Length: 48
Image 1 (cartoon, rainbow, N blue to C red):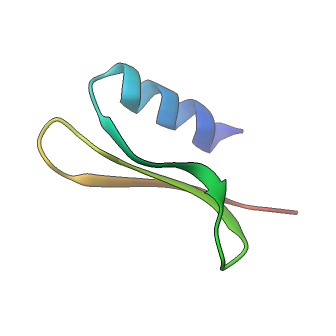
Image 2 (cartoon, rainbow, N blue to C red; image 1 turned 180 degrees about the horizontal axis):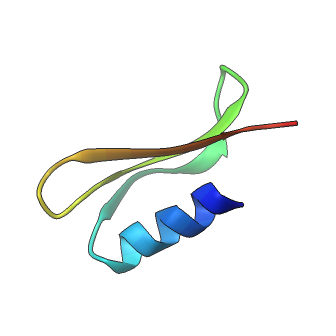
């Protein structure tokens, strides 16, 4: 689960969670966070 690990690293580096990792209506797992500079980061992966 590379996306989950990357999300964990971003949060540990000071990003704030906007939406936790979850199954989205389009069929992917996705999470969103805000980095310390105010950029929205998206972490997503397809579900087999």
